[in-house]
Length: 391
Image (cartoon, rainbow, N blue to C red; front, side, top):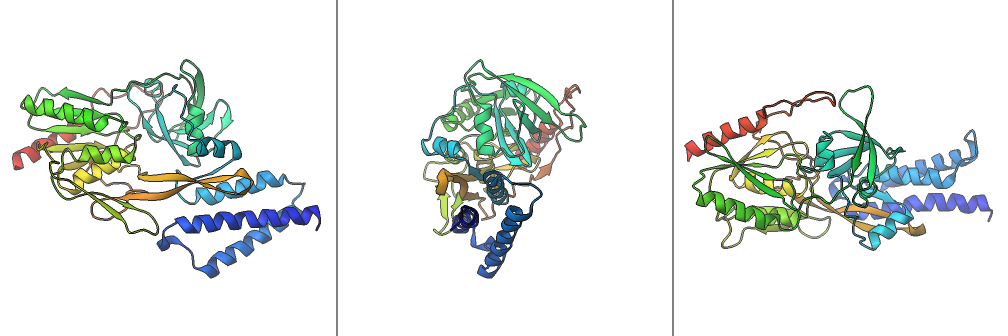
């Protein structure tokens, strides 16, 4: 067998391995029938053969195949990724991220897309927003960078810097910002009393301890006689799903909190327990395109049980979990294997939540002065007042 033939067999067999792995994870609803899969593989074989034999110049086979694998995972969801050997080593070892952070949660949409921006972080102070696109990190294009890899490129030692090339809206030219990484505050819940009565409870992150901090904050408001609260989840995108579910238990006395679904086992329904739902005041939840993950699961639990209307924008639709699937040649797939459903069984991942009252965030260019008023918050307070009067 010639060296060229060996290359050809390797190039064709690797996609087979990947496709089998993908087929074992994706839901049956979107799995192609066997004859369609084999047709696609035959087309793939023809494409590889033509590239190897007839492209205008000799190709780098590794680069072509890595690009093909990235294309396969790009068709799954924004968080799944094809991992290179160094990334597999990182994922397999569960290596913690460096402490230095800029405060961004990213997904993938052609480039890296900013989902959430942490309050008070370097990214927030620089004016970065949900739905901005990161076209480059330290002059490295992100066209072929996964969300998995991008999250790691953004982290580093406290005091170190990272340069981002950012696109916003229809701006013709990118905006370059340099951020200094720092250790972010572990304060995730803050409260503000409004002069007209209701409180605003800001959840900046669903990190470890957020549910307990929220419990303490809400208990203090109840003791102070506050009759309602707006829970602000705009741009809140990080933290484990379990923390969002634990937070929902504070407000939901009975019923379904969330449904966790994989491909083959029956879905797991997570319900409220005896003693849950101690906080009974009327609520409204502020959500945006940057509300993702645990914040989406939390919002869906409260909204689905009639505990709070959603005001704002459709959420990000990123309520899922990923894990490493090892492949030959020390490659790997960082693949979504479980997703969360709302209380009515509808998927959150890939769809997001639709607000009961839609209010758009203002469009602000990099050089614009942000508005001094918060229209979305004002509408949420109006909605809360209406709910309180209806009780």
